[in-house]
Image (cartoon, rainbow, N blue to C red; front, top):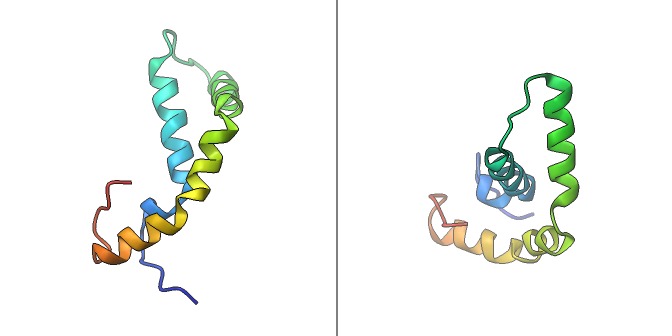
Length: 78
């Protein structure tokens, strides 16, 4: 079993995916005014993330883990 630091968003691919979605939502000219509209925007942005970007998040997992261990659980830059 690998030692897994508590509260380590650097090691969570979904956190990075949410960051991508959040940045895309902020770029939209018209923000969602209702919950269903927001849901639709998030869904569209999720589907627009290139599969290569998602694959990269998983492919860099070993490097992220190593950087987190090297930095004693502090910010790694990922």
